[in-house]
Image (cartoon, rainbow, N blue to C red; front, top):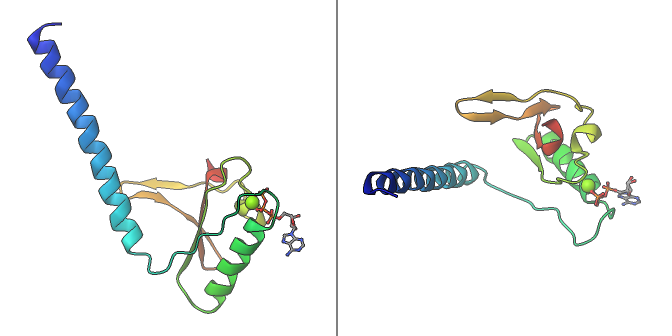
Length: 113
Ligand SMILES: Nc1ncnc2c1ncn2[C@@H]1O[C@H](COP(=O)(O)OP(=O)(O)OP(=O)(O)O)[C@@H](O)[C@H]1O
Ligand SMILES: [Mg+2]
């Protein structure tokens, strides 16, 4: 490999690193805007995680809180189905992916992709 090729490879790798760092900064910036975050999780399947998460979100929205739900189930994301918004399309903007909104709740799920 020539010096020029090595330099090019180095700069491509550096650019990738910078992009990843920028993504991390964006995530931290966005997450910092969310005042309260509640994680609903368990080490076991089928115990009611989705049911609890969806009902918590619905209850908070009903109380007037600005509420969002992030369904991070990658094996069987069923939050869109539970809110009746299955098959809805996400909107991609320069500021990121806009969640699907229903009944005052912003929903993001792998199930939309
Ligand atoms: N408190 C409860 N009492 C009885 N049944 C419940 C309760 N909560 C949830 N269920 C039922 O248990 C089943 C699993 O619930 P749910 O999908 O919320 O669990 P989960 O932990 O999210 O499952 P998974 O690991 O598959 O994502 C559903 O059929 C749901 O209706
Ligand atoms: Mg679930």
